[in-house]
Length: 297
Figure 1 (cartoon, rainbow, N blue to C red):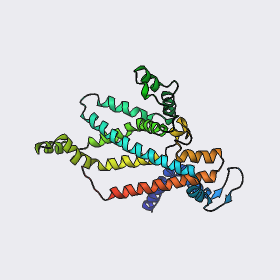
Figure 2: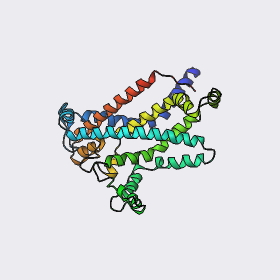
Figure 3: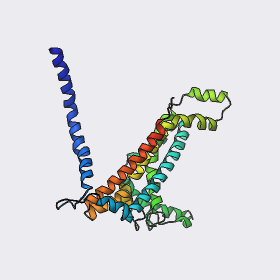
Figure 4: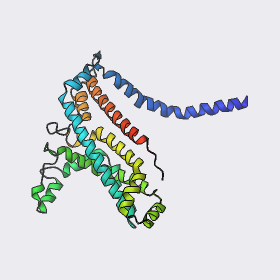
């Protein structure tokens, strides 16, 4: 009897400890997801009663909303740009720092500092740096006699999106670098010593051994970069607000505009869920592509 009571008491105690966190998760995560999925089938402005309209919001997204298609294209360009640059430069920086005898901690900390800085602060900082009239970047280019490189970095529709990609890379490259650096530290030195005895160069070792062992880490970094590229909002909203002329409009800024400026909460939620499904499909494809390979250190 006492043994049965002890087991049940332990079981109940465990659930009591988990209950507060579980309740908060349900309230702030599960409920908004479920509620959002429901109101995407309604016309609702947040004040009056909701009107069920079935798939009308989704029909408008796919067949009538040109801005959504433009925003999705910008998200795709943004994701491709950030994924490729952050991972290539992050890996190169990790390789360089891994070879450092001194100053490894300094370089790692310095490059990681933007990661822990809020996007609000970074957006304001870079808005000032890239300001076409009195920005720091254009001022420096002018003073060093490179005035021909002066640009309207965030107000020119042709380059504004790429300026945002550059800011995003600057913020997150340290994050990916640290992950790659940690993975490089796990590569056994015995493999390098054996490759050296076999006459392999550092380049050959990197291409045929290091990259192979880093594939799970590369897949992880690519996945989170991809998700970040498609879910970007705060940086775009702070620096350009989707302008000029929708040149930097992404899906979530379009969602914000529809939901909170035009008070089309049902439609705005539908755009967000379309983006969610797209990102989910892309993530599952990548995970499936990488799932068949096994890599061991």
